[in-house]
Amino acid sequence: MEEARTKIKINEYETERRVVIIGGGFAGVRAALDLLRSKNNFKVILLDKNGFHSFHPDYYEVATAALEEREKPSITQFYSVRSTVAIPFKNIFKGYKNIQVLNDEALNLNPKRQFVETARKKQIFYDWLIVSAGSETNYFNIPRLKELSFELKSVNDALNIRNAIDELFEREGKKKKINIIIGGGGFTGCELAGELANYLKNLVKIHKRPGKNHSIKIVEASPAILGGASKWAQKKAKNRLLKIGVDILTDRPIGKISQNEIFFKAGGGDAPEKSKLELLNYDILIWTAGVKANKFSTIFDKNILAEKQCLKINKFLQIPLFKNIFAAGDIAFYFDPAKNNPLPMTAQTAISQGSYAAYAINREINKKKLKPYKPKQSRFIIPLGGKYALADFGFIKFSGFFAWILKHLVALLYFLSILPFFSALTLWLRGLKIHIKND
Image (cartoon, rainbow, N blue to C red):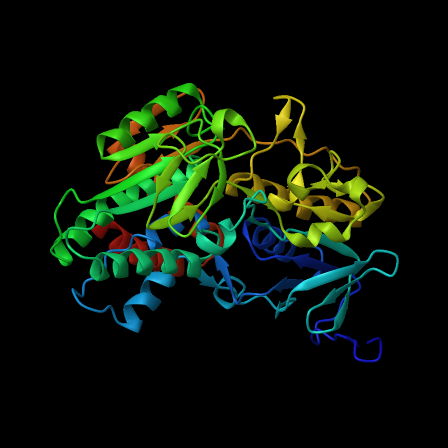
């Protein structure tokens, strides 16, 4: 095995300051761009098993995309939908010389010799390492859940959901009621449920089915949906979803599932029971109820792991014992002392931490003292079907059409922060043209 490994030579722009970034999500891309735009001459190596950066806030749009063709959508249409959330790294880093994106996956780490081992049996050495590998679906050891449900963690997952629902409406008899269950009433589950309400109405027309012969249900284990949001947002979201035909079942922890049945834990106990109160039939189950840190985190000592397998980090986002290793985004566990709770796994948090990691490395090179990371206040915009969204900025809250407009403007601002102006505007307009068809 040792002989098969190779030390990788990146390109001719070799410098002594090598930063390796694991993961090209929100944190990784932000850190890379900030390092490349700094006055210090870095070589940045970005490791990602995909060839693109995913804009996951719009996965729910891809999962409900209304395509023009009434029969079988073409490959070109699927590619067009996919391209609204999958941004090639070559477009983001065009014009930068001191970066190479490697289509590879980090599997192991040697912090003493300072290199990352990859799936392609390469050793990539670093002076600084930013671990921003993201998260993966958490199935909470529920029997058969992974096997029988759809997840929504990638653009391909979103397309699979869309196609599975479309095919189900085409395949099933007209009198058969179709039941779609969304496991989890968090942000992803509520956004998807709201958008599905319109998508199913379109499918009813396309496949000439009875208008009320389907259902969408959110199943949530806790007492309320949107557990991380304000009471105002929880109430407004519930009322909105109920209004557009989404059923909401709270206090329903799932015990196990079979091919077409969900068994709930009776009275909060461990043993699921078959009864009308504890059993729910489904045709499609979409699991959005949990995430945990990417499996890469488990290569570290258990003392470094926090809840959801996330990496504990200090006030400088450094992993304990390794001052040249930073963690950012979903894989990082940062406890906010001001709010007395961990930071949420959101794009805002990832971008903020990725930017800070780049700042910290720049400060260390210039031998300047680091200022502790300061979390930004979380701001939420939650689209809930049609041209409607909730905007909760803490000091100001509003809902409806203008919140929906703001959601799309926020997406544009993000694209402008990572792409040249016309590339960002073109991407945004293309996505808006496709996504708005379902609104």
